[in-house]
Image (tube, rainbow, N blue to C red):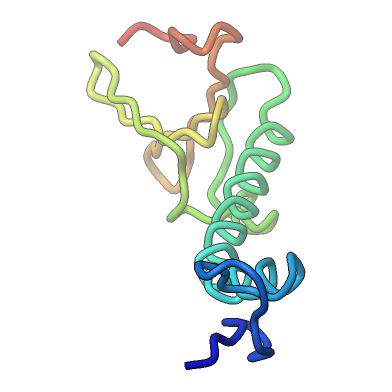
Amino acid sequence: MERKCLDCGEPLRGRSDQKFCSDQCRNNYNNKINRAETNFMRNVQNILRRNRRILAELNPEGQRKVHQDQLIAKGFNFEFHTNTIKTKQGETYYFCYDQGISALEDHYFSLLKRSPDHEEPAFSL
């Protein structure tokens, strides 16, 4: 039985456990297999980065109140965040890395930047 490259189908010469005829074929094959997963992760990462950039842009001082329309106009996606923190007061903050957002009344949101040490948020839990 003749062994063939898993990517291009060319006959293989050399080691008995060889699967590809070249590094290029090996890379092509693995890129094809991982393409959908890689694209999904890339798209999610881009959304998270954009959300963080929007929050940082709207909150240069570290704490601010903004209307939902401002967030929507800039393209903020409310479905994606990196982590959630619930305060002792019962507020839930959704963070995109170091930038947090919490819903208030009348379509307003409280924005908060986490302290630089990333261990403790800028508020007490």
